[in-house]
Image (cartoon, rainbow, N blue to C red):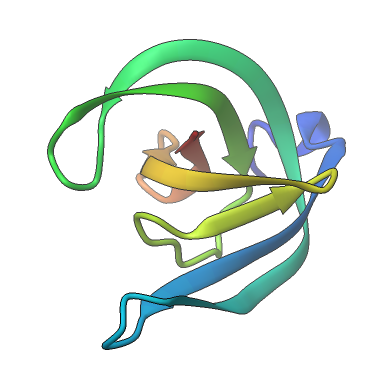
Length: 104
């Protein structure tokens, strides 16, 4: 059982992948719906998926089992966010315990 399982008392409406067509238009495909999470408002900096030092304003903690990518769109409470970076946090046994996601 994950260390944060009891703290995941909020819900992300959806997580969507983003693809760009030849004209530069983005298309979003929903990958996950109703994702349980712990949501924290926090302003700090992290190295993004493109290697840049970027400021984020949300940290979301998810249970393991989600395949995420940089720049996915996250929808929560009718607000849209983008994934800047994420980390798989491991427990003592070496297995992924939870995913820490940095959003802007």
